[in-house]
Amino acid sequence: MTQNIYDDETFFTGYSRLPRSVHGLDGAPEWKVLRAMLPALAGRQVLDLGCGFGWFCRFAAGAGAASILGVDVSAKMLERARRETDDSRIAYERADLESFAPQVGAFDLAYSSLAFHYIADLAGLLGRVHAALKPGGVLVCSVEHPQLTAPARQEWLADSDGRASWLVNGYLDEGERVSNWLAEGVVKRHRMIGTYLDLLLGAGFSLTRLVEWGPSLEQVAAEPDWVRERARPFFLLLSARRA
Image 1 (cartoon, rainbow, N blue to C red):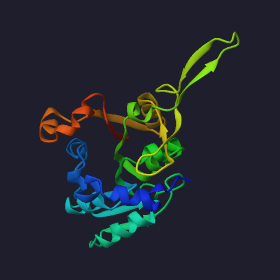
Image 2 (cartoon, helix red, strand yellow; image 1 turned 180 degrees about the horizontal axis):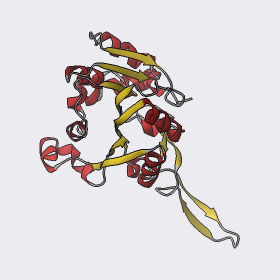
Image 3 (cartoon, rainbow, N blue to C red; image 1 turned 135 degrees about the vertical axis):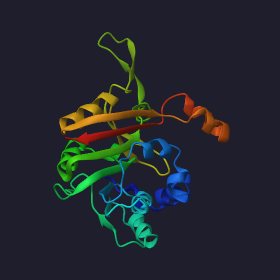
């Protein structure tokens, strides 16, 4: 089961204060690029995986989508999403993405923002998402960039001759990472870029775009604190299509 850190009171309080929680999609610096990767939404059936406060669900409704299903494991997130949504086209469902199985052939677009790096069995989820999309359906998603998720422990070990050697559990070492972001013990999964691509292709998708997102110079000029984010990409944005 996915760690439900968003229902931890400390984490939820901190997350609720982030710009993307206060200002919605416009508070997410990568949104402009991610939005450009979306297909036309008018008349479409949309699935939002890890919908959080429902910002994208309400955007999709505003763009003319026929129906939107938002799914999240967090009761606290869904409570606020329902409170702030007044549109009969939008439905919310509480479910763990590790096992959630959307209706086969029911959706034109599957969207996910910053959720897949929490999922252990991403191959299984992508297979179910592929099955849930109609022919020609599109998946658009974002994850924390692997350069961001990679860092882990560093320690001294002794080899068989008693000489010290340096062990780095870094980019090439995929798997669980535990951090203290907003709360202690937040569990994420580190995967290399190539692994994300292999998982998409293995699920039957065709990759249509990949963006290693970092703030533009214009964004840095408006938000000088973002200059440090020019040192390495912050997000990995992907779009893929079902044949």
